[in-house]
Every structure is written in structure tokens, then in C-alpha cells.
Length: 98
Image (cartoon, rainbow, N blue to C red; front, side):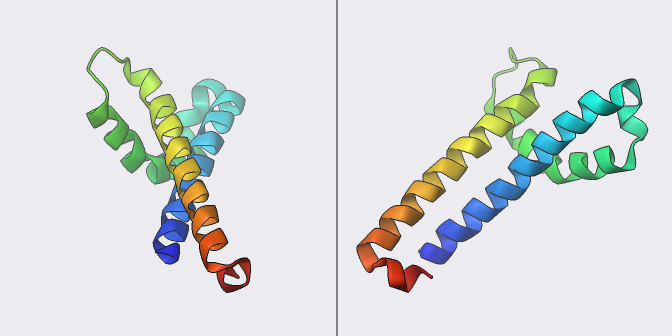
């Protein structure tokens, strides 16, 4: 189970960094962000998580807010996986978790 928690934590970390990088690059690039190659790569990485967040949210939520919802959901998943991993390591012993 430790490997599953680590894998979930890793996937959440990658997606969180992609969404954060996309947001920061969008601020820096401004209106030309859609033509930026790195922005497009980050958008491709984050798209599956934003799509899931769109499915989970009601239609009342604006499309421009869905990436924030995806970021928050991933943050909660990351926190849950981290807490589970810490609890598991404390139960089996810290030496076995390395």
C-alpha cells in the first residue's frame, strides 16, 4: 500500500506543478499565452485533471474557475496521500520506509 500512496502522491505532485506552472506562465505571457509552446505542454499535462474537475462540478461553476477547482482537488488528494504515507511509515517503522 505504501507504493500506491507514493504513486498517487507523485501523480498529484506532477499535476499540481503543471497547473501552477501554467497559471504562472499565463500571467507572464499575457494574451499570447496560447501560442507559447511551454504553456501548451503544461496545458496538455493538466487537461485530464481539469476535465475530471469539470465533470465533478455543477454547471454553475464558470469554466475559467475549473482549473482552480482541479488544483484544490489535487491538493486535497496530495495531502491525503501524504498523511496516509506518514501513518503507514510510522506503523511499519521509519527504517522500512526508506
